[in-house]
Length: 307
Image (tube, rainbow, N blue to C red):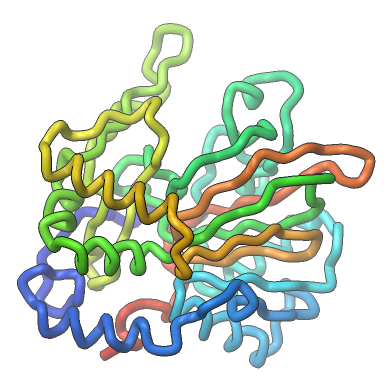
């Protein structure tokens, strides 16, 4: 069942602005030995459908530290949907976001759509996708807490991703000015207008925060850098916070990792910030990725490890 992303004030979370001591203790542990390159996130595995304990622990260790890992499997261009689905189950993610454009399996096949309704949406095009977290337009009780992208086939050229741990984004903003966090936790800071279909409301308007604290104390982020189809609060402090976040995302920060998924590779994450460059399909490759969105956070990868 869906998990609510409603903020709650908790005394045991480092994301509570009223507890600087806990934040500073968590921050020190979080940044200690934090990955400094994409290579540090890579985990070779034989088959994601049957992870060994060593492979599982290597992936989990990286997700615990950076909220993400990239596996390099030997499955190549095998299109079996069980590859990402089995991986999700192994990490305790079972509640798929079966959106209206997903496959019968609950996965979404990300390919260029030449016709039909999918061609209206950027994920089914070869155009760049700007910084976002997945499902930022979902209602509060259907927020996306983990995401798997599995590459069946890469494009002939382009299609690289940039990745940023949302907890690092929080640290960089809070260190700059804690009031930025207060602003971005506002209940009405970000509004996604309704999606209309033939004059009827296909998805209602959604209003909510950027950062929220889950009942278990973990941090959730809901964000898109797009200027269309999003309405931001006009509050001056909110605007400053958004400018600061945009500056971080458009910088050469060492915390931003960039790379391209090749056949058999995949990203497993707690719905971190990410983007995608434009790409071109050709005889060398026609891009096909499976996307699995879950209402669950990846099991045992939260702040409990820092206590």
